[in-house]
Image 1 (cartoon, rainbow, N blue to C red):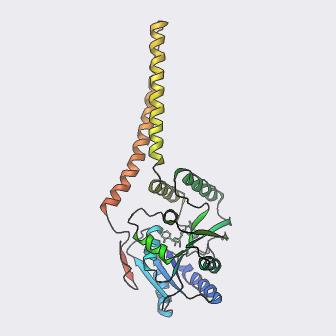
Image 2 (image 1 turned 180 degrees about the vertical axis):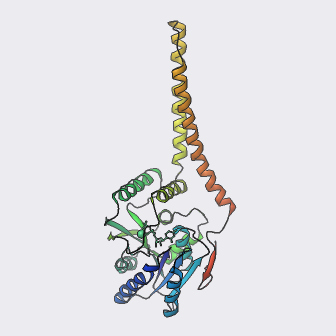
Image 3 (image 1 turned 135 degrees about the horizontal axis):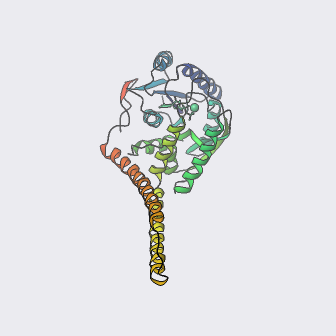
Length: 313
Ligand code: UDP
Ligand code: MG
């Protein structure tokens, strides 16, 4: 039988959340009378997450799983989950219950109305640190500014997508997978369901400040050439400025016969240019790194154990 909805739950060290999240999903889906399956992706957890998942697989025939050989990151885990989808639509859900499963029936309703992608929009984020909220606010706006892809604001990975879109997503060959950007890029009719983001149920966030920063760079680089263009613009401005300064110095020397102590200007200029060059080399390097990864063509993840063969791109 094909289920209506496949619910993908990536989990990394979430031993205490596996059962609660499953029970909540189960209650919600049974109450709404929607047939569903749950796909757990254990992202190389070092605690008892995998055991908890296997317990559920034993007791419920609508639960499947894949476990990675090590931690490959949330983007790889969700990509694996999408490849395992058998239902007519798929939902991506965090294991920590920050995104309430109660919203899924509303998403399902929208999908029935004909929307291929229904994302959850966070109307309020309870108890998340101000710094995290502020940086995520800024991140989405900057990303929007720099890309042509209409990435929706204040939207996380919590979403329902039609099977057709899942198939297209699975066929995208890129290694650097910024999931929400990719769905925005694929397009189709999209809409949002508002919900309040809750505090994490148990355990702690795997996305510290640095990891979030790196994710932002990934997102920017995979969806925009704007940083490279900014380098070009900067280069042009500096070149123009240096021409101007040279002209001024020559005129001063020839017309007014001034004796110019040049070292201050020179050192300042040297440091400035050195800094700018290093920064731009870094930006270019970031793109080359992405190209390198893509060319290497390694799989996104290595399966350690699975209730089936999810395949690898
Ligand atoms: N996660 C994962 N692999 C990782 C990090 C996180 O599969 O390397 C899972 C994690 O178990 C959770 C979801 O991705 O279900 C979101 O992670 P988290 O709650 O730490 O992120 P936040 O909500 O703080 O952005
Ligand atoms: Mg979370």
